Image (cartoon, rainbow, N blue to C red; front, side, top):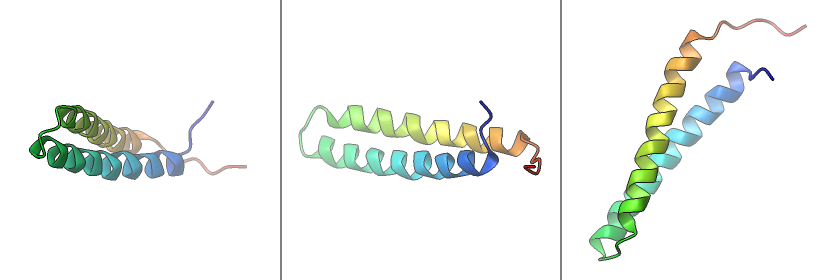
Length: 67
């Protein structure tokens, strides 16, 4: 299965923005006294970090035209 560069590009931004949104939600929850807020923070940061790794991976892919 070959993943196209365009799909990786979409996945990158979903992971980065979704991860940062989850991180912000987790910070708000933890300030409200909910213990599970730190789980949101950790998950959000992991997703954003994975998105950053995919940015690097996408930069290494050579685009080949589809026939």
